[in-house]
Length: 492
Image (cartoon, rainbow, N blue to C red):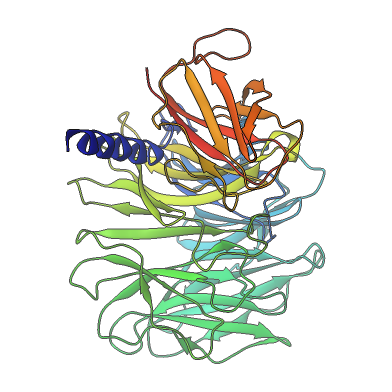
């Protein structure tokens, strides 16, 4: 009985270790306030390009827009200014396809609030001149930007107070000229928080929240043939459904969860999601269930080689939660709820993105969550990451692997010195086992012996190839040439 209890404690400890994200990295510095981050994900089956985050930064007399690029997993380039126009530049949003990047934001100059947009090309290292999307006396707010895969072109949507109500408008850019302003919704309700997304390779969708029925609902509309379709209501309850957030990345198949939002249908704020491409629309699915205030969802989807297709659920969903008395960042990673950061500060406004490893050719994919926090006395941006193996998804379970039928036969946690034993369902001559740390650095290579068919063993004393003793923590063991990936908890 005591032995079973000990095993249960060890497995519980090991599972909890898998849920620990690396310590947060501060991405901004200085006495300036840095808020409202937004990061893009290219609509590709797997991550192909750098991660770029934009945000607004305070200065004397106003705000400016900045960006920062992460090209290969952990390497962040210095911040680059997007706009330093007079007065305040607020609420930036970003989109990209391959190496084209577009950023849109609100410029408050005097009594006017207009939407501006800037572009960074394939070979540029700085943002181009700001282009006016609107230039009038109406309040224009909450921009969303999208860009096309067909050529260097973009679209911007925003809300404008032109008839006593907040309504939706769009404009398209063909690389040279902007189209006329296209009204999308001009009804008797208030329409807020527009967000572009795409659920297949033909149509572009926009989602937003509207109170035209007397309470907030989530709506979508589809652009095709030069016009927008009639709005389709996604939610139909008497509750408030707000903060629509399209899933970033692959949005191209039926039954995929491609839209999230925040709802108070259960008496407190929770995150829900559904598929916009299924007919009829499925019943919304509850993503959080902690009877606390869970809001501000941001989600990520891409295809992994071991699956050959996207999963039904997003691979990574991040949100803000107040379950422990203050606002912190939580995530669902491969259907496992995890704590990203609990620093007893006001952590909020999470956004997710992803980038491949070393020079875009590494075996690791870095999934980042970026948010704003006032933990050091002023607002700064922080980020933390989890990694996927580009040749097979991590399992998230102790003593198992992503390769079908593969098993980790040794005790976990592993206490050195000892024997690492694996079972692989197929014979692998000349097999090499490689151990990596959380940063994706190769620590050792070993060629195991095989005592029985499919069973591979190697002695390990807890040191890397340089002879350095490794500290307790989480490591990854990769049998080269297979789809398996094992998590090892080293315990000293």
